[in-house]
Image (cartoon, rainbow, N blue to C red; front, side):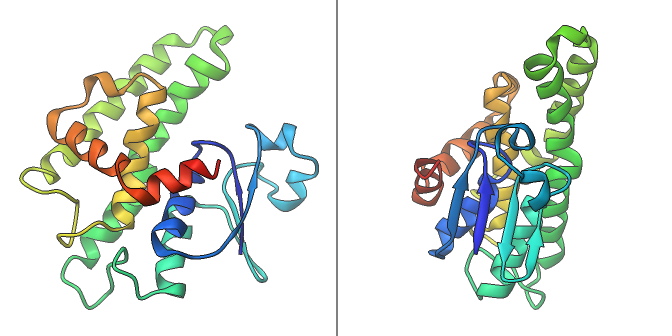
Length: 201
């Protein structure tokens, strides 16, 4: 297995999952954006995005999907939830929601506050920041009285959603996190798997 990764990019999700599962994987650390900084990266991933994950003849580019693949292909693992468990549907919903609902608006904020501020689209960044925080209401509610999102244990749903909360720190969005999200993120960032993954960057 090989993972193409940029520090603290969405590729941190599968790297974190690999560390939690104790799986060996070659790691290619790159500067962001790799389509400009890593020679011939577009030949590996024509979209130029990160992550890119290789396992034999398989190529994957969706961070939450790679996490799902790892627990299904190399499990069973405690960080996976399987179809015979009551929490399976909720678990899948959080995996899909983590990008479609949470990191999507963050990418708009990132683009127009950090990467292309000269375009003057500050209102778009603010609007999408508000959208992101409104979507966090579901996370805040789901964590009421709980340590983790589903199945009464740490799973890749927590990796997927927790990464979105972590990314919010670099964008200054964490200042408006509510108590449950703050508590949850702090707990996730204390995990050995998370810290081993970041150390490998």
